[in-house]
Image 1: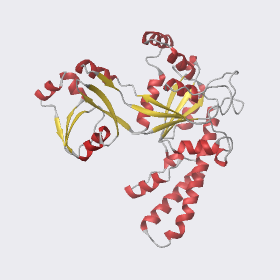
Image 2: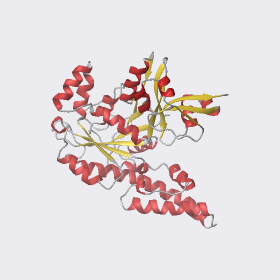
Image 3: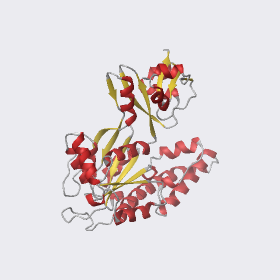
Image 4: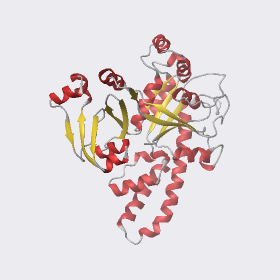
Length: 366
């Protein structure tokens, strides 16, 4: 399931440093604009304490966590929608992602150049918002031109599409994002998704702060909170430079001591990865046996056959049933056999909707 989050922001806000913290891949990080040109792709392990607990109970030969992909995309500047800077490339790269992690600089440091000469995260956010909205407006207007004539035939489906495009156009012209428009009905939702609008993607704002602000944030963060309060978006406060230092430490003990000194209970990047996972509308189910305990990724709302298909397409094609144990039941009772004795093992058919944390075993025939 190759769903990707794209890390975006103005040049020199900490995107590549954050990417390096998240991924084993090492993006170039330097104090000048457009340091990142080609997008860097990293596969990130999703932290999940439930895997550790299952390992303690099952004693498998190996444990396999689930992953997501993170892309570090070139910095964007004003005028990108018209091709300024690396604008065309930036916009093409972000179109290929499924969600956006927008990094905002919320710290002062005279040694790190700001592309606009001063620190102002709300202005920086608006620069990128505007460029993405302008590009979406261009997409919507071009689609409208191609459909207006066809709508005169009275075709109801096309009329609905034109109505949606006009609603999107009005929102974008107001300086708002396409995600504020909620199409209703399966057919029109499919059309909406097919437009691949940049501002329709779910978004997480990462406020990059200094070490002193790592726990509580600062005045810049509060301004960002105020600016996005009406958006359907999350905010995460992260001291990216500190996270980079933690990532360089060799042992778990050293990392924990560092975190304790800062008054933090876990690395901020762990929270970011979990937030990105949720941003992509993903959830986890498990398979648990002596050979392997493994986390699998499915979309929220996936059915049992779809979940089986993540393991192998034959499992979905020949799906017969799924044996399902709730994670809390497994942990409280301690083993699959005791779950069965307690009558807590569910046998589910093709209509079953997977829940986060389900432990599943599939029966199939091909």
